Length: 71
Image 1 (cartoon, rainbow, N blue to C red):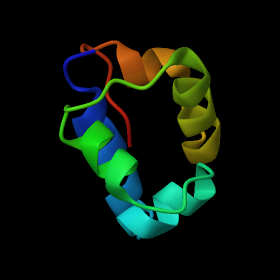
Image 2 (image 1 turned 60 degrees about the vertical axis):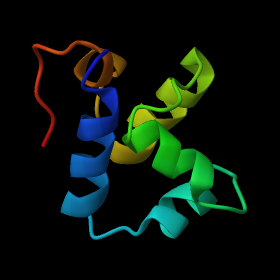
Image 3 (image 1 turned 120 degrees about the vertical axis):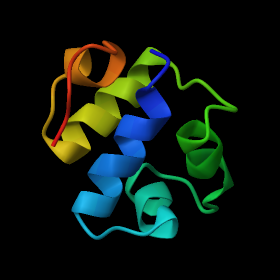
C-alpha cells in the first residue's frame, strides 16, 4: 500500500480530474483530504478505498497491492 497515493494521482490525472473534482466526487467539500491521500500523509479506510476504486473503474487489489499497476 506504499504506492496508493501515487496510483490515485495517476488515475486522477489520466482522467483529467483536478484534486477539487476528486474531492467532490468522494463527498468532500475541500480538496485537502484528497491531497493528503495522494501525498501519503493520510491512509484512507477500506470504505474510501472501495469508493475510489469504483470511481476510477479499477479493482481494490489494483489500488492497494504495490506490485499491480493501474491505468
